[in-house]
Image (cartoon, rainbow, N blue to C red; front, side, top):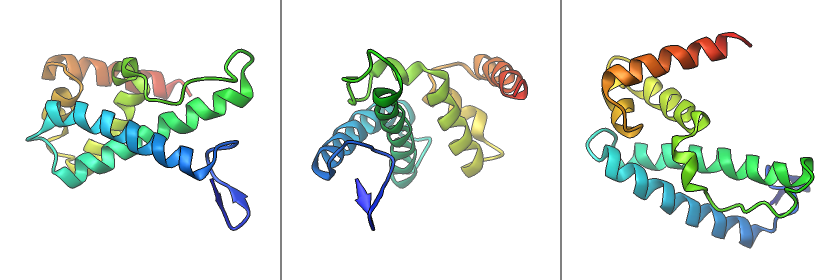
Length: 133
């Protein structure tokens, strides 16, 4: 994709392909989280969160194509296994915590399919991981 002669995010991808990937991946992600958090986020928030997740993975998957041998043909469709990936959980936590700082635990645990207790433990471990860097 190019804007004013600059390549943005998606090297070696044409605009039509990126649009199709974005729309398809967005629908996959939004459908998944709509089922988990229908009453936890507004539709607009759900759209924003879904787009954040989609852009994160589409950029990463596409970047892998140029960086790693054997990944030249990496599929750019959202991998459903990534719903349970720590980077996806990070996107959810950062987004929901910013929108609902006083009530993020309940919302995140639902979206991440955890009990509130499991979420608290997960968040603590994840913060410890981030603190290492």
